[in-house]
Structure formats: structure tokens, C-alpha cells
Length: 299
Image 1 (cartoon, one colour):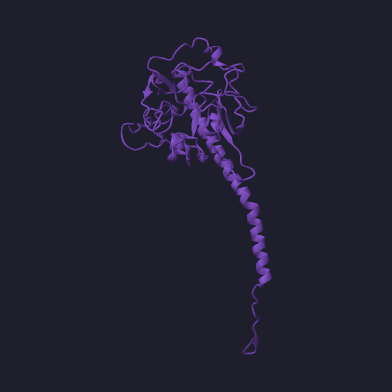
Image 2 (spheres, one colour):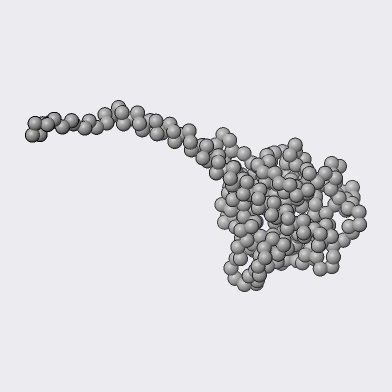
């Protein structure tokens, strides 16, 4: 183009091929970077979950000192004339399930809360839910199959919302019997102090709810580390051990093993309450005002 004797160069735009090449390069970079970013986010959530468990461990250590080596527990009427501890009630908020005290016991009366949070909770008798984010794992994706025969609770997007906590006590070993907990572990069936633990570095105290994914003979599909459809999907748990160190992303086997290469539910290798489980020396029974003696009204 000429203008008053000067030549002005024309600006040539991108050709279609050049645009397609640029788009392909961008798509390639996105494909490379997205899995890396997703993995980084997952690692960050895992570390945050472990940090919450570590704080729960500090609170649990103080609780054990005050209550004669008994884990925080609430006895619930599970059958006429029979009460048993519910591991999920050790701490957290009111849940949604209308039985086992889960929707009755909240921030005020779940026993570990006062050791972890320095504030006055809303009374459980009041309507509403007093949130306890200290018990919500950033990994919590609920369960696609809870195994409950109640349509509105057949699945959940959050164990924290349904149960009141993303974490639970080691009160029994996984089994295939949905009607009962066959082998109690660190919480006696009628409440009270822990048995003597041989190896505190391998015995778990508290873990994410995924630790019981295969309990009761089912599969709750708690894929907190990835979607079930993905090739890297796995069932894994964050674990607080009895020596108060924390492990994250520990595999949970589908054979319901009480002992794995990473952890054990059992206080000692030959543990079997049917042969008589002894408590630690000098630990006979909880104090009279121990929360193990508080009962919830089941529905």
C-alpha cells in the first residue's frame, strides 16, 4: 500500500495452519500440567488432613492422661438392655443419621471437643448444628455406597456431615458381619480403658472413615484419593498411631485384614477378646464420671 509516496507494509494475520499448531501446543501443555496440578492439590489436601489428625492426637494424649488411658467414648443403647461405644462419637458435630446418638450428640457432648477447641459450644439441646471444622478432612468425599438400607442415606458427599466427623476411633477390627463388630480392639464392648498395646508405632488410634471402607462385608466406595473410574483410584486412609505419629494415604486392603504392612488394629499380634483381654497394668476401670458412662437415646 502506498500513501504519499511511502510504502506501508501490510500486516499478515495467522494462517489457519498456524492457529491449529498454536492450539495443539496449548492443549499439549494443558494435558501435561493439569495432572501435575491435580497431584499437587491432592498432596496438599493429604498434608492438611494429616495436620488435623496431628492436632487431634495432641488432644487425645491429654484426654488419655485425664481419663485413665481410656479413649474418648460415648455409650449408646444399641439393643434393649445393651449399650456399646460408638467410635464416631468421640468428637465432632451433630451428624445426620437418626440413630446411635449421631444426630443427638454434637459439639457440646462429644468428649474430645473440649480438649481441641477453646470455646463454649452451642448446647446440643438447641436446634441447629455447631460446626467443628477441626474434624472435617479436606479429603472427605463421602461414600458412594454407605450400606445403609435408608434411601436418603444410601450415599453421601460428606462423612463429616453424615456422621459428624471425617475420623473415627479404632474400636473394632474390620469384619464381614454387618450385624455386629466381631472383634473389639482399643475400646472394650462396654466401654473403659484401652488394653495394653505392644507396638504403639504400628497400632492405630484414630483414622479417617475410609479405614472401615470394607467393613461389614461391603464396599462403601470411599474414593477420597480419586474417582473410581480412574486407573489410579484407590482406597486409602490417614492414620494417627498410638505413639502419636501420623501416616497419610495408607492403603486399605479389600480382604479386611486386621493387620497390614502399614498398620494394625490389634493391640498385640495374638489379640482375641474371646480369650480374655488384659488392660495395661494398673488400669482397671474408668473413673465414675467418665464419658463412657453417658448414654445416648437411640431411635
